[in-house]
Amino acid sequence: HWAPDERKFAYGLPGNLDPVPEFDPLGFAAEADLNTMLKYREAETMHGRVAMLAAIGMLVTEEPIEYHPLFEAYNKDIGPAIRHLDEVRATSPFFFEVLGLIIGSLELQRALAGFKAPGENDKFQYLKDGYFP
Image (cartoon, rainbow, N blue to C red; front, top):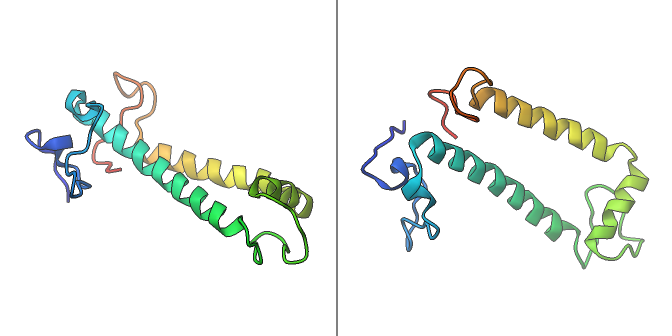
């Protein structure tokens, strides 16, 4: 279990990696209090997950395309990956609406689990006590 340590970089949050263990070129960590540092970690984790999924999506759907998880592509010349969205819409008309609802419900669940409700805190976007991003 992690416990904050004010003497350490970024309150001792796990994640320092060699060869640059205290990487903070713009100095955000030096100026941040504990709650702000935890919000940074929450944002970093979520944006990192989205970026990894996007990178996998681009790799799966780019040339040479013989497999696409959402439609048959071996017999079509659709072109670059951005045009694949049109093919997904044609094959599954409600795919993006369902995907939006799923992502929205997951984000709502994460926000309810991690953040204090408005009015329960002095500042905007305070994390709940004991929540670790």
